[in-house]
Amino acid sequence: MGRGARKITDNDAGDYEMKEPIRVAVTGAAGNIGYALLWRIASGDCFGTNQPVTLQLLEIPAGMQRLDGVIMELRDSAFPLVHDMVGTDDPRVAFEGADAIFLVGSRPRTKDMDRSDLVAANGPIFVGQGKAIDAVASPDVKVITVGNPCNTNALIANANAPSIPSRQFTAMTRLDQNRAVGQMAERAGVTASEIRDVFIWGNHANTMYPDPRFATVDGKIATEIFDTGWLQGPFLETVATRGKAIIVARGASSAASAASAAIDHMRDWWQGSNGRIVSMALPSEGWYGVPEGLVFSFPCRCENGDVIVVEDLPVDSFAQSKIDENITMLLEEREAVSELLG
Ligand code: NAX
Image (cartoon, rainbow, N blue to C red; front, side):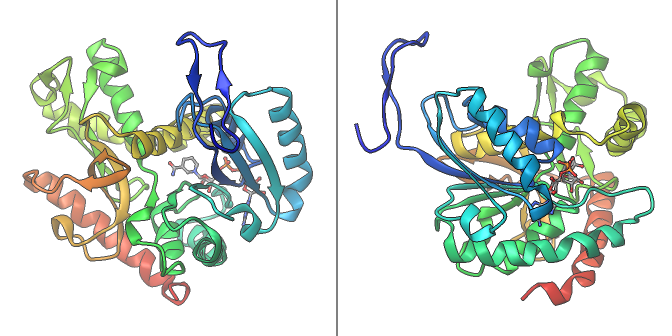
């Protein structure tokens, strides 16, 4: 066994060897999503139950006292997989040697803000964090951006980290995918595990498009089970406006479901998606006519630690109109942050 590796003997599988610890950074670690996310990472849901983790947690100075409390609670949870923990307000400390990074910290949108206010408020955070990732993270780091507007924040971080390949910067549209799965499962009266291959095109915004054309429900073609009126009407509307509906119902934005989606995204990237199509936003290489560099959600498969865009799906006129709408919006966002792109 190497440094930090130890044997676990009190598990169902019996005696098996632990891997070397990896370093996992989470920003906004004392926030609502962080509070749900950290316990899932620490319990092995993301990187595997034989993969120890060093948690490197970033907050702003005003969040450090709350972060101390979170670290105390993590310690009190006595997770066998938590090798070490660091809490800091310095991105270079948080990202030092990081193998995986969850960029969650940023200001959530409030009632008085429109989307351009959000872009202006949060964009600069990702300049400094991109530079710090470039300087100190592992060259193989996998980055998921959750903080909104997540596609454009990933674009900014990527642009400020020139030594890290662009494909290692992604943004999260898995919550939108999971919302689509949930709607289909409820309508068909099946569990979520029976729904496959529904995925999201575009921006994590109400323009995103949950494409049902290749989805299956218990092995049957989804578009033969659900009528087009529902798929292009209430289904699309519910998925697109779910974030707002959660805020109205809970008085707070999605947190546990967002953390769960971040786990799904990183777990599939790290461990593979087993042939399933999953949604990930990543810098376009011109796929499906999306301008190069725009961080856009595509149908993807994950294998051997890589994200592979599924490039050969036919696009009908409805899907094309939705893809175009998302391109327009993301180009506008890119224009609004052009001075932050290095
Ligand atoms: P909270 O306000 O509860 O937590 C955010 C935390 O980030 C706070 O503790 C704050 O101190 C910290 N923070 C702010 N600036 C930071 C910086 N520069 N470095 C490190 N930490 C910083 O928000 P929460 O509910 O956790 O949401 C976090 C982000 O996720 C928001 O931007 C939100 O809009 C976004 N979301 C993204 C989703 C997606 O599907 N992509 C869905 C859920 C969520 O709305």
